Image 1 (cartoon, rainbow, N blue to C red):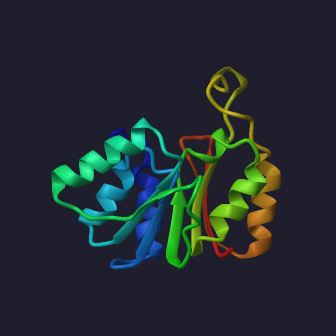
Image 2: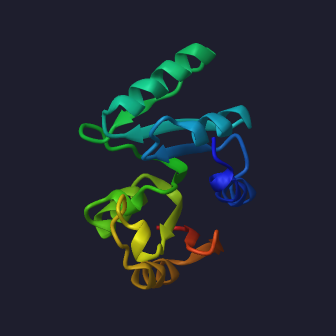
Image 3: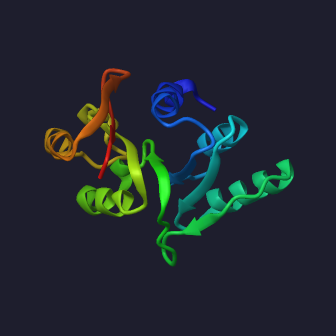
Length: 158
């Protein structure tokens, strides 16, 4: 796993101690959630059904771990202490809808907004970062930081 997300996880775990119920929203292969499970958190995973999620299920089975894996085409996870989504919103068609859906899942949300240079946008959509930050600041941010020069991490109560 790349250490890119370690500072994000550090902020999340400082604010939300174990054994909190946490949702890894847009989990992919679940590396972040697996680390949090090892740290004592009760983690559930959510993503659209795809090969990465199949690999996550295999990883859980190989480790003898049980965790709920939600299919976002069918399920609407709710009731978590915190939900996080790292390096995901820039893939969403509508970032506002994404934040609304994410905010419905938990009491606290942790998400990052990438403000990348034009040459790095081949795989991502440009995010309206100033507007997204303004929205989060209106909701009552718990923490806001910038990492790697272009990743705005926010923790807030939706």
